[in-house]
Image (cartoon, rainbow, N blue to C red; front, side, top):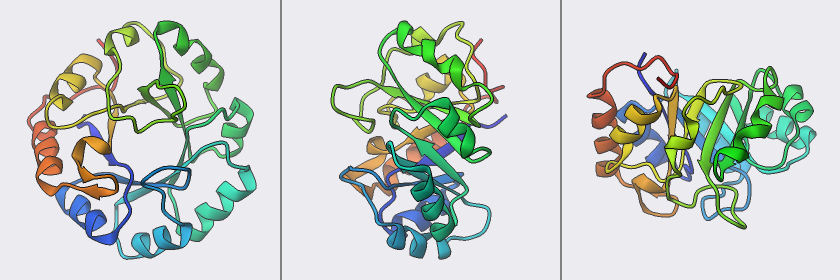
Length: 213
């Protein structure tokens, strides 16, 4: 199975079209506090201009379910990625559209994931940092994932770029990767050369079964 690629932090149509042409599977739009935050109205305009078969995801942090659903309808989002302290029941209410993100701070931080089994379509694992909910641009120690049973397909995040994406996929064997700052020229502006390099690295990898060895 080919590793899926999601490009997060999209803020403009040029980057969205460039990413779709490069073969990215999904685009992420951040509706929470971030240098890459976008309004629902602006995201809607971008999504309406995308070619078919490009999936879209909205990123939220501790947002009310009603507001998440409103933005989903307005923008035509395929999935939502929840980066806050959202409990399993809330994620379950958004099924089958919900992904849950967790910050990894050692193996013990993975314990709560089991509570989300059956409530999410997949899990996004990112690096931990005090005061941040993601997007800090650095990887975590992938070794802590060895032997861990996850409640859904793994989407690996955290400082992924041309320099380390090959090692990350071979070490973790995720279903997908979530890239952002590692392919930027500045926050919210994607670098075509760096994105192309990531896509070449992914294309050169052997197929993965989406699970760790």
